[in-house]
Image 1: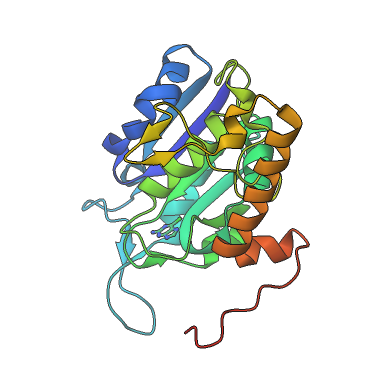
Image 2: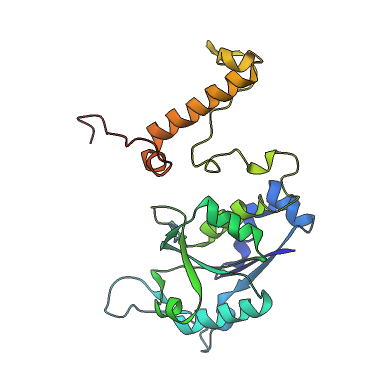
Length: 239
Ligand code: 6GU
C-alpha cells in the first residue's frame, strides 16, 4: 500500500481535506495509508521545545536540526524507501513530473515547517528534498503537504477509476487543459461553442488543441515557452 507519513506539530490537521472525496474514499478502501507523526515527540528537554531563536538575530523562531533529524530518522524506519520532502517556500517548485515519480514509488514522507524555517544543517545531514508549492507564503507546511498528497493520491492505480486517469489533463501535455462546457446549451445568452455540438471528433480535437495553445500563451507564457512555443511579447505599455 502507498504510504504517506507526515511529520508535523499539528497531526490533528490530517487527514483534513484528504479524508473527503476521492482521497478519502481511497484511504477508506486501503489504497493508501496515513501516518501523522508529532514532531514534539522527539523533543529532549522537559519543556518539549522544538524551536529556538535564529542565529544572527531576526524575527521568529527556527525549528531545531537535532529534533527534526530524530523525527526524520524515526519516520524513515517506519516507512523505508519513502523519499523525504520538506515543505518550505525556499524549496524547488513541485511539478507534475515529480508527482508522477512520487506516486509510482512506495510512498512519501513529508516534513512540515512552521515558524521562520528549519535549521539549514538538516538538509546537509539528511536526504531531505526542499519543496515549495508556489510563490507565496503559507503560515505552515501542513496545507502544502496536503496539496502534494492530493496530487499523488489521484495517480495511485485504482483511485480514479474510469475518469481518464489524468492522461490528457493540464500539464500532462505541457499545456493548460482546454475549456469545458456542459448543459444547458444556452445560459444567460451564451451558447456552447458550435463545434462541440457538431459530432465531428476530428474538428473537436483540433479546436481543443488550438484553445489549449491560445490559453497557455495568454495565461502562462512561462509554460508556453518551455513547451517550445514562440516567445510571448508583453503588449507595449503593459506593466
Ligand atoms: Cl511548502 N510552505 C510554506 N510555509 N509556504 C509555502 C510553501 C510551503 N510553498 C509555498 N509557500
